Each structure stands twice: as C-alpha cells, then as structure tokens.
Image (cartoon, rainbow, N blue to C red; front, side):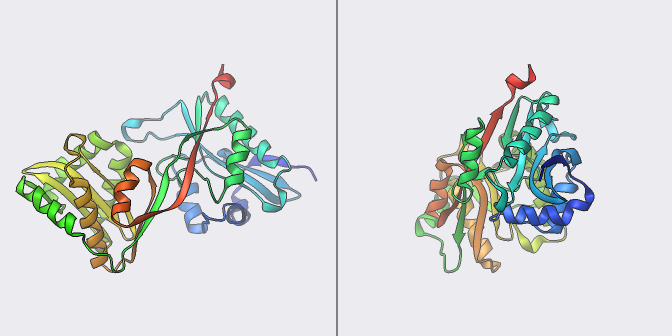
Length: 318
C-alpha cells in the first residue's frame, strides 16, 4: 500500500487520538485535551498537523506549530517553529513513514522562512519539554540520524508529600530571613501591581502568563487548589512561588537576592501548604540540572529525562 502524506481533517479525530496514544505511550491524551490544547490553540493550523495515511488508516503524524498570534512581548518569533508531538504506529516503524512526515514538516517550515525548529519547548501548549530520553530512546536516535541535535536536557521531578516534614534547617533559615527583614507569605491583592511586572522583568513573559492564569483563579473561583507565595522585603517583592493542585511551580528569586536561602524557604513553605490541603505529591515537567539539587533537598526525585531537539533550517531557506 502507498502512503499518503496530507493535512489533518476534522473526521480524523478518533483515529488521530488512538494513534497518538499508541505511539506516545507515556503521554496519552483524551478528546478534551486534544480539542483544547491542539485544535483550539490559537496557533493551530490543520496543514501543520501532518498525517500519514495508508488505505484509509492513519499510520503516523507530526504536529508542527508556527505562531499566528503574538505571545506577549515575545511577538510572533518569525524565525522559529516547533514540533510538539509526533509518532508512527508501532507496527509500521522503520519503514520510512517518520522520514516522510518530518520531511513534509521541515519543508513547510522552510517555506515560511523559519530558521530553527525545536522539539518541543513551545508555549502555551507543549505536552512534554522534549523527547523522553529513556521511554522514547529510539526516537532520539531517529532524529539524530536525520540531523537533529540535542540543545538541552531538562528533567522532570516528583516529590512524595505524605509524611514529609519541614526540615529544622529550613525553619532556622526562615527565622534568619525574618531577622533580615525578608518575609515569606501568601500573596495579597495589594501585591498585584508590583508582582506581575516583577515576574515579567525577571523571568519573562511565559512565566508571567502562568502566574496570571493562577492568580485569576486564586482571586476568583478555584482558590482552594492554589498556593501562591511571595518573598518580600518591606514593599519590595524579591521572589515568588506558585502551585495548582499537585503541579508545582514555576518559582523564582530575583537574581540579586539569590544565595540567601529565599528559594529554599519558598519551596518548603509551598510544599507544606500542599500537604495541609491534602495533596500527596508534587510534580513539575521541566527544570535544569543545577536547580535539581535544590529540589532534591526537599525530597524531589527525577522521574523523566528529556532532550530538547533542534534543527537548523539555514541551508533550506537560502
């Protein structure tokens, strides 16, 4: 049978979700997630969801994204593109289907004058930070063979909260901060005028977007699911931390105020608040190796390792 490489059709939904779950076994989705995070993404275009069809059945797919709508002050990022998900039916691998799909995706990026494509640090609707190096090891090898390079290796971590206690050294550290005029406390409405500019200036617009989403829920319906802490010295915000249900983060400290233990107290206090609400674990998808040491001190362990893959299209766009 011949393979047809074509754009996604609305009637493909059930088959596409089934193919996704067969091929991306550690990152399954349901219809609600597919509709809200793929079809209703402002940057989604049907010709960017490229499928491989054989005799009426879907055998592979690649989800390729280019910005149609600016992301805050990051704008349209016209030089960049992203692949956020891809897969080939387990029974049809190593038969050239993946190569055809990626060739079609890269041709589309090149036609749009994109210079660099990454898997998969796209906001707002990425599914995983990159390619899981353990669970999808053959995919990493496949991409490297096609000329993709590993740009970074973020890790995902998780902490069990049942029985977890505040460490005495953290209590002492917090007391020392208080003696130096630094307080860790829940965010208040009075903090909002200073908080959001602080996040945008110190950590960027994607963190701003995340914080705004949580704060909209915290000061409206859904407050019981959220903890949002700030570190302040007088009226100055020097750090913050957020959590929704069992998902922890992001959190950060002003670079000028790091090295004083503020981050560790923010982390520990947020985990304590999660335990008090009855949550039994905390997890997040993405951090670097250096930050992992702080998390490990509070009981987090690595559960997944990813490779952010990058492909340079310079030669194709000249």
